[in-house]
Image 1 (cartoon, rainbow, N blue to C red):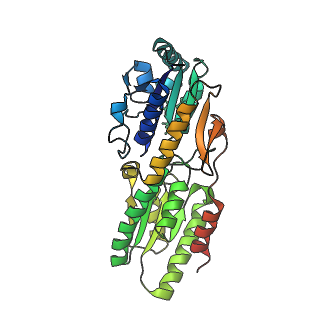
Image 2 (image 1 turned 30 degrees about the vertical axis):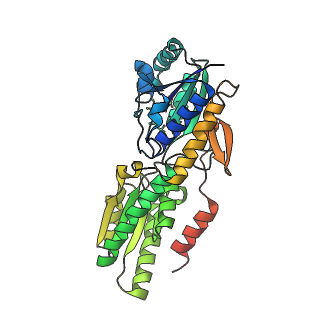
Image 3 (image 1 turned 60 degrees about the vertical axis):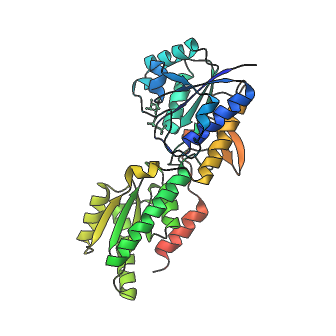
Length: 331
Ligand code: ADP
């Protein structure tokens, strides 16, 4: 049966969102569904700002970073009045299914909307943070690891040349996936992530102990500390000052910032985005609603939306062990 499907990208943008749009467009064409794209996240829903996503749109799309629908944050969508307006607009546009590509905030928004709209809602996890439970990875996560890793490789070159200490802040809000993986992949010397951060004193003592022990053994050397954003009070400057107070100077802070969101998606993100985009549209017209599609052990899964944010997703145990033994047990 013919369906009208709408799709949008919301919240923090992530490489691979376009690849996901492409897969959805192609699947909709195969199924004979009409596909509309709301622009600027939930703002587009409130403003009834949409475009038709035809097959032509897919040309040269898979490799493009960002999102052709643009993304945004939308305060008024959080209110009941905003959600009701969005619901009215979806009814006016005769939409059967809304697909939301975004992070946990966007999923909370979708769940809120479902109180006022009885159409079908499907979420697709798109965030560089990988902080969504129910799926092994989120679209954009792998590319962000690569970007952070290659930036840290470059930092290492200059750190080695001057035998300096570098603090590198990576994104990740409340989860250490990106920091931990970037640290392991770039052979960083230390990582600070929210999941195993105890106190500033505890971390400082460990860092200072390591730097001093290494310098005693090997003389002057570089030392790279990867720091997840929002973990250290007062950020990199606070950590830099704390090290200074412990007699460690020559510390340089680097914040990678928004470069981590950009760039052409790596193959893993293109593959995940394509699989999830196709799978989401294959569920159109079924009884599955208020759900996210994800991937676990390389198989597509369907997860109730609230399960995606109810419990914090744990870091990979083997990775934690690997990083901890590198940080604490060598010296
Ligand atoms: P992300 O989806 O990347 O986590 P945000 O947290 O910024 O990004 O959320 C994106 C948008 O989702 C917000 O601008 C808002 O419109 C909506 N949203 C976020 N949290 C909620 C909530 N608790 N209730 C309703 N809508 C929300």
